[in-house]
Length: 519
Image 1 (tube, rainbow, N blue to C red):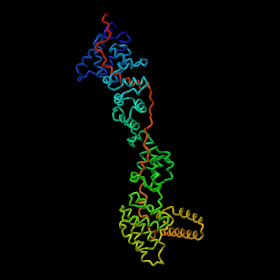
Image 2 (tube, rainbow, N blue to C red):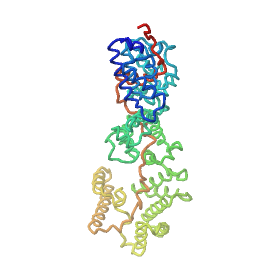
Image 3 (cartoon, rainbow, N blue to C red):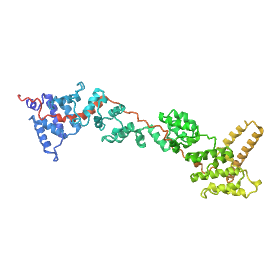
Image 4 (tube, helix red, strand yellow):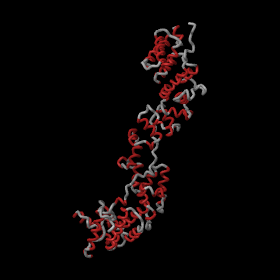
């Protein structure tokens, strides 16, 4: 016992603890051939002390070996030093050690706390903040250090407090983090940057649905949910807009109201007209009362073509012709020009202007089968006696439907019921005769499996119904992932303490502070 006092170890229990400490330290820092002279000399001193010859040089040897040990072993050793009450640290180091180990220890004065250079990981500062319950006291420079290693629950707490933001990008600088943790932190701070596979791995349903909506995967959208309503709005279903508005963020609501407001006059900001994902919704909202000027831009040309088609389905051929005339001298895409000429030819056909039909259809490309069939139909009609010609209309269009529409029977029954409400009896008979004629012609074509006698319109339905790109402009900004951790103060303090303890190595002495030279 007297010999151990020279090494600053007092009491039998303390001696046993130190012997275990030294034995573990020799195992933790092996003396291989690559060890430098300082480590080799330190190992000799430690072994000498274990053999029963304790010396004041033991403290310096322990310090030398701890400088080569892992942080975990350093923390374990310092805890043992504190438990044995060994005077191996300077008074300042002892104060700091007690502040880290003893929960009842009052907070250290700022002057006694380690400086930034003495606390490279920011662990001591974080420990003090956790003990005081005031994480807001941490400086920005300390924050830049602790995001590299702080426990995830502590980071979550700092995120909730607004102290850790996306600017710190902790997912980039945590070497011990796995892919799920990095994805989780990014989802908490930068949700829009999280990839779909990462969102799926996190089980983050909202983000998965967000990606599915942008990718156009309708089957993955929750029926009646925000993204499903956005999809329907993008397809031109204006009936869902009120319900959709209740699910959008404030900025998106203002944008949607601007969309609806522009429909009153058919005027929208240029940025909206350039967004083709809005076209079907804008077209559905705007019901023009006069012919549209297609020269105003691509959207107005698209809407003018749709309007002309709608007028044909309403059998208002005079207005349809007026609208189609507005396309003269307007440069449009080839597929749109083909539809314009075909619609114009159909309108001319209703007036039996076959020469005009032939002229208009001459420009329809030879590589388009339906266009060639229409041209052949007109040429055959020219060579047929007037009294032997079939009715010029397409019976599907007579029912207000595109060519070969599968629901024509339902439409026929609906129009028959509507005809009974006509006040004029002669008008009712004429309407019923028209509907019956259309119905019989479709049935005859179905039995014969031959629709070649019908003028096809539109040639390409896709020109009138462009693919509904996702309404990204109205899509809600993906909110951050909801926190999934709980801050356990005891666990967090232990983790942070163990990280801070190696910083006390600089306060180690070369010899014990109170060696008993008199015994």
